[in-house]
Image (cartoon, rainbow, N blue to C red; front, side):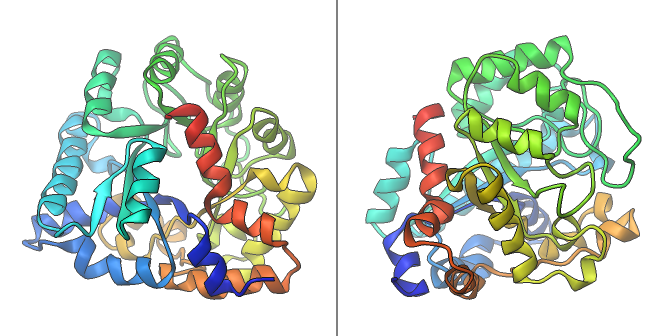
Length: 342
């Protein structure tokens, strides 16, 4: 068995969910520049991270009127950072971009919607976001929008609705363009509407198993199996509330690895990925998180990406094989990206 450091060096390492641009854009408004290089890059490198999927998440205070504007603010912030990064990172829109960046020692950043509110029903505008580099479409956060309904963290009785007619058209257009659908945060109705549509792999960028952490925000056994059956992947969520809903204060790395072990045995090791969802940096800047004491108390089980070394060491200690760890670190996500975005 290789060491953790060797595994991180020898494999493509991907975190499928980080609210990076939310943080960057907030800090730009406060007068900062070069946020990715100054605040994140050393940690990414220490953890062997090759790819980060940055969400485009719009705080509730800006919706609906400013959704489009804030999404463009975040993407613009990315491009300003890119212009001044000295070649430290690149925008990745396909797997060739990822492999090229890795060979050159550069970080690859992918862009993803976390909630499709910015389009306000104007599906034709998805093509413009594709041109700007967005390749993953998270249909919703844990709230309702024009296309889809989200799961609720604390309301197990909430049923809501699934994909609207506009939502079905959006999914079809995203797939036509060559974009990957993200089902994290969707409620059951939305999830099954997506999976019963045109067969294609999906990703849950940052979700856990409901059997171990009983909140509607997480995936049921049937959902986990369905993602495996369509050739998809799940980025297991490292936020304490998501990983251990019953007692988030006691969540540890072993809590997180319990989810990997459960999903591997339930479905397949080919299902597994990393979606740490590190929220500590953005919690104080997000009105959505600050408005709910339970959300604002969430902490990151793996607080920074240099923690990937200890995380990988624990996977080895828990009996995961080299092949399983290679897939989990990023190989499984790369397979899905090749199939969907190219």
